[in-house]
Image (cartoon, rainbow, N blue to C red; front, side, top):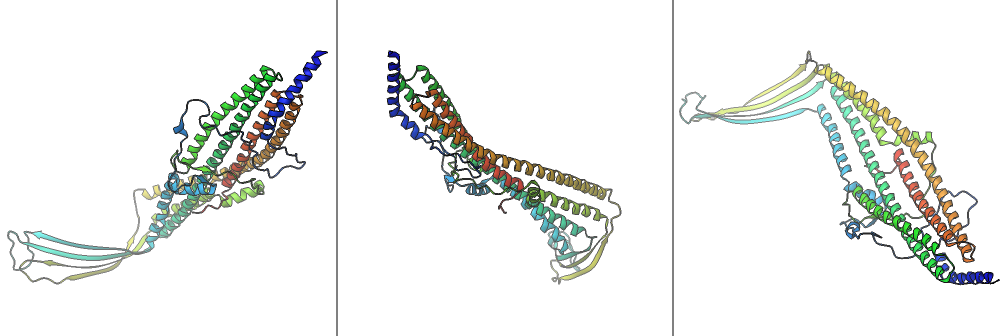
Length: 491
């Protein structure tokens, strides 16, 4: 008869202890949300765990290494940037884009050079010479130290009249190559933008993971104190403390790993922007829910990608450029006609004689050049140009297949990411309700501390999964725009 009374007293004592300590855990738990009967198409922002203590500096546990986590400001670079600002910084600072821009300027210069063939070629010459020991004037005899001086100046001009269209073919080839080069540079700009977005969202994801793990460590440490208090009152067994300590140790290990990943992500983000690895620059948190625009069908997306993808357009223009280059090589077999004209004047000065007047010369004519035999050089040039064209056609075909693969994969990834985000939100809602129910049961003695800790761990896992799904959806959006070539970046 005494056993039920002792059990009842122990339960009452445990309840009184929980009245003092459990409200803190309830306050730290995320608010309960009612599950919606309709599918969630626009998830709310990530439900970050409530921080129950100050952030733990790096490394949370282990040998201190403050210089690894130390960041330095960069003149003119804000410490916190939006994605658009990060892309602008990368465009200015990135050495990769600078290299591609230099390559394009070389391609663009070819257009002006080829167009110059349609205009006259003008050259001027001038010379003055002195011949010692020789006198050419009459009445003068050569002797030591004697000399005469010759002066001349001339101007020549040459104009292409006919070459079978070879110069025009060279101009067309250069112009098509210029457009292809510009599209290639634009694709490099899009690639840089996508790379920045990857680093941007990866760093945000890692930072959110650290905040979640930090809060989880504080929460598990608080649970340990709850269990110790219950052990002192006889409301819990000592084995419950071991279970709580295990969860705390596991959370601490996850926190240390996450902190290291943040430092790696910070360095990667800074170097992607063309800055030093220890530059103090971090992304701004994402504002609100992601905007989910309507997704096109595969065929619609594919047709739009064919129209917008700069790399595919560059492949098409490269084929056209190589066609003109092949025509240019073949036209070397045609004769060429050019007009030539020249003006010149000169005189010779002899010491001891009267200065001569300048005498001028003029010429005007035309030149016909007929290729007869060039030792097979033209045949080789034609064969090389034909091979280059075949390679360009194959490259265009491969580019078309790549566009198809990218669009199909990007579309599927985006659809799956959006669906995963909805399910991750549902998991968070379910885990929140489960934790609150377990806490309520524990308060009345209908559950154990192990069940509470398990429910907390489940919620933390669900929250981490939601964070990953949120940034995965954002990155999938960026990837879809990249594979479509659909963005507002311009040169």
